[in-house]
Image (tube, rainbow, N blue to C red):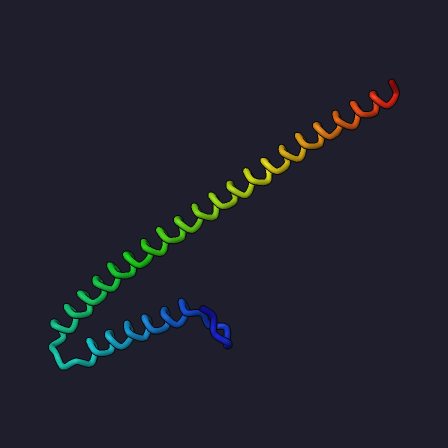
Length: 109
């Protein structure tokens, strides 16, 4: 999905996610709480965010690996189709050459 201004759906989703993170961090920092409680919230928030980011990155890596594998398979399939077409062309050429040579010999005799 691509918008007129060049933004894609993925970019919009990333921007939305970053906005949510900034908003959550601001809520933690500005919420009335003691320093110790705020530090604990920040630590927990950071830990949760890092875990989620790691999961997200792992998912992206898995999807990319799957995409690369599909692309590799598609290229291999196309390569095999082209090789088969070339082999069929060579075979047809050989048969036609033999036919023409055979007809030429019959005309001479």
